[in-house]
Length: 476
Image (cartoon, rainbow, N blue to C red):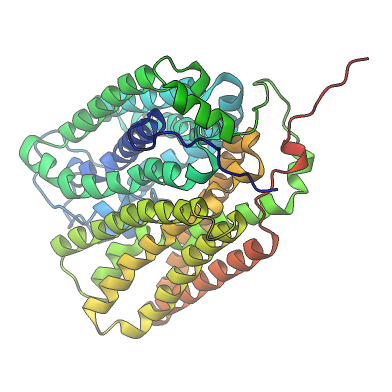
C-alpha cells in the first residue's frame, strides 16, 4: 500500500532536511574530487619519455571509473617530484580504490543501520580526507604505500557512500525522497565536473601536490560541518523546529530498533530486490563505458585534440548534475500533485534512464561523421542515465527502508561488477576492429540496458516487503 502525504506540510527549502541534503551534496562533491585527484595529478607525477595521454588511459587495466576522463586533459611540466611508474603500475594504483570500495560496501551498509550513519559516514569522509592529504608524502616512500593508501581510501569511501540511505530512511518524507536524494547525490557529478575543469590549473599554477592539499582540506571542512549539523534521526536534532519534526515523523512509518538481524534468505527470494540489482547492473554498464572510454572515443573517432578532449570530457558531468536535480524535482512534483502513482513514477524514470541512453548509444555509430551530433549524444548519455536516480536507484527506500543502506551496498556492488566487466569487454571488442568494435560495444550496452529495464518493469514494486516490516511482539 502506497504511503500518503502528511496532513500538515512542513517547511521545505528553509528546513533542516534540505540543509542536510546540501551538506550531503558537499560530502559527495568532496568524495569524488578526492577520488579523481590522483588522476589529475598523475599527468605531472609520472616522468615518461612518451606522450602522456591516451596511451596511459587505454593501458590502465581496471582504471577508476571516473579517472580516465582526466588523463588526456593536461600535459604539463612537473613542479614537484616525478616517479618512474609504468602504465601497468598506474593501472594497479587506480584499480586499488575500486577494490577497497568493494570490501566495505555491504558491511558498512549493515553497520550504518546499527551504529548510525552519522558516525559511519563522518568517519569515512575524515579518513578519506586525511589520506588525500598524506598522498604526496606517500608517493615519495614508494608505489606500494600509494597502492595501500588508495585501497584504504576506497574502504573509507565505501563507508561514506552506502550509509547515506540510512539517513534518508528517517529524514525524507515519501513525497520528497526524489528531491532530497537527487540534491545529495548530484554532488558527485558536480564534483567530477569541477575537478576536471580546475585540477589542471592547480597543477600548473601551484604544483601537483596542491591538488591533494586543497581537496583534502575541503574534506576536513566538510567533516566539521557534517559532525556539527547532521543527526541520524530528526527526533534527536536540537535545532529542528517542532513543525518540521512533526511533518517528517508523521509522514514516515515507525522505524525499527537499531539492533536487528538481516533476513538474507527473504532478500535472496525477493524479486523486487533483484529488479533493483538488475537495474543497477544495467545502469553502471553503459555509464562506466562512457566515462572510461570517452577520451579515447573522441580522439580515435572524432580526431579531437588532447586539450579539447579534456574539456569535452567534463561536459557530461554537468549534464548529469542538472538532470539528476531536475529529475528529482519532477518526480516529486508528479507525486505531490497525485498526477501519477508512486509505482508509475519509479518505473517511468527508470525507463527514461535506461531507454534514452540506449537510443543515444545505438545512434552513435551512425553519426560519427558529424562531430556536433556525436558530442551531443555523448553528453546526453550520462545526463539521461541519471534520471534513474528517481527510479530504481532509490527504490530500496520504498521496499525496505529498514535495510536501505545494506541493500544500497549490495546494489552498488552489482554496479561495480558491471563496470569491471563492461570495461574489459569494451577493451576486447575495440581491439579486434575499431569501427565495428565500437558499434558492437554500443549495441551490447543497449541490449544490457533493455534487459535490465524489462526485468525492472516486470518485477519492480514500491510496497514495503513483509520481511522489512516491524514485527509486533505479543506478551502473555
